[in-house]
Image 1 (cartoon, rainbow, N blue to C red):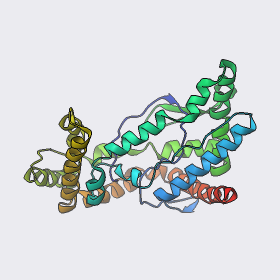
Image 2 (cartoon, rainbow, N blue to C red; image 1 turned 60 degrees about the horizontal axis):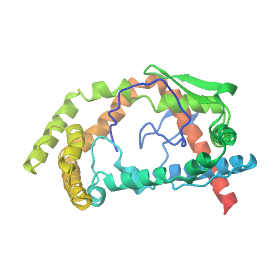
Image 3 (spheres, rainbow, N blue to C red; image 1 turned 30 degrees about the vertical axis):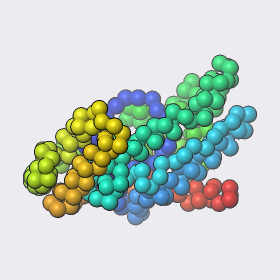
Image 4 (cartoon, rainbow, N blue to C red; image 1 turned 180 degrees about the horizontal axis):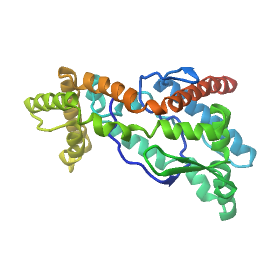
Length: 301
């Protein structure tokens, strides 16, 4: 939901199956490309469905089979963030443990993986290159603001799909990787801000009064697995729900949820000014992709 406390950069090769990652929910940017906004969860889902349709069409042109797989629902996407504040969601899902197990089951049973593994070696290699690209034909490379480099193949059905939806693939890869890797540039200062520190202390007092002694949401998330270890699935879920409801209730009763939202907006505006054009371009290209994705979906109706 709010502040994502991820502060590590990386060096990796990547051809991830979805390009819907977002830098932060609910903010608008304005740069050289004009005023833009972030996508809603429902809009991201539409793009992901269109991506799969385009990839399937591309793969089938090469003589292979490709199955559409379930896309994460709006409800399943609501567990992100530093502190829970939606009591109703917490009461139903806890921390989303059951949703995570469902998603993992879907990943393990992906028919595309089984299909690839069933192919003879030469065809399996050709299938992989068809879907994800051939590194020997060139890689797109981006240096992250936080250090390190990420790469992805220039070709393949996923690369072609992204270019069709988002536009120029090199520009898209650059602005996406930049816009979605900026939290380490401001979160270390944000978490030391006295306004957040005081809000976390108030939240901790509220949790303690409710019978849950945790210094901050991170400690709760780290230890919730210990609390539920060895319990039956039903009891583990009930325990998770109890903790999550208490967390969300205290986030609302105290100023933590409001303060975290406000400070993230403030720190992003202050610390990320030099990246405002990249962020705005990222959001613009996603809005363009949304319009094109609607056309793709409509053409399949």
